[in-house]
Length: 270
Image 1: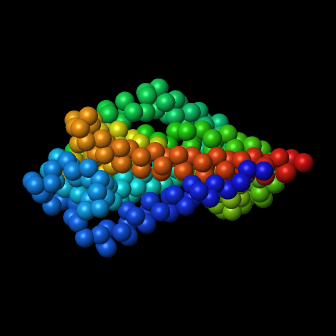
Image 2: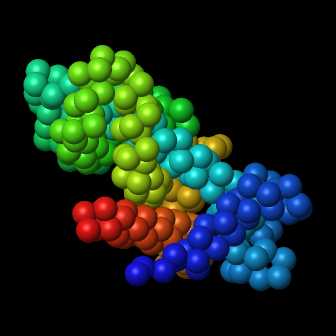
Image 3: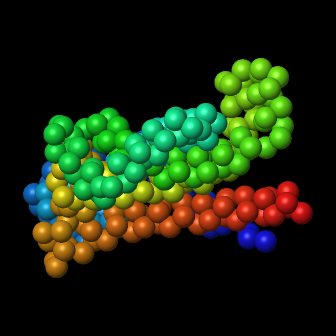
């Protein structure tokens, strides 16, 4: 029996507290320039050092974390709900609806996700909401495929067939019977989606086509640090470390949810 990853959960809680609560208590600004304190290494005065313009890196990492986490969570919520609705529609109605949805999913999957992101973002002026929408549009296909497969199995269950023959409304069947059974898959997909969205935003910002200054994200800080990485390692190391910790922790929690879901299925079959 797989144990709950407590350390991963603690890491995530700490990162959220640091990014969303600590800025109200931390005195140094993420935007104040100081030409006398350029590229200072970590110290008691500047916990994570300073950047090329003398700005406090710890404050910038906290501010950037807010944007990265908001983009990751909101885009994953939207993508997961899109995948849920599309997948249930395919599995519940089947026949023509399923064929149309499969063609649509395959068309999206034909293009590598990151190149599809690049293609979409190149025609828009990047902002937080634009990134959320674009990442959502390119992130729902995997969820839809998993939900579709499970929806087919649920639709063929005897009690669902009885409900359909009894002329129970489709919406009532979906909400009351499909949604609870599909909840574990939804949460597994959601946790994977958050980490994927954060990585996507970081990659786009690193390439200079995501979040643009004066807004800050972990990807923006990474991009700013790449040019001086040989003399100021801390500029890239700390935001990169936080991206790794969030992604790794979410994957650990997702693995736990998947293991619990599999155990439940085995017990039901037994």
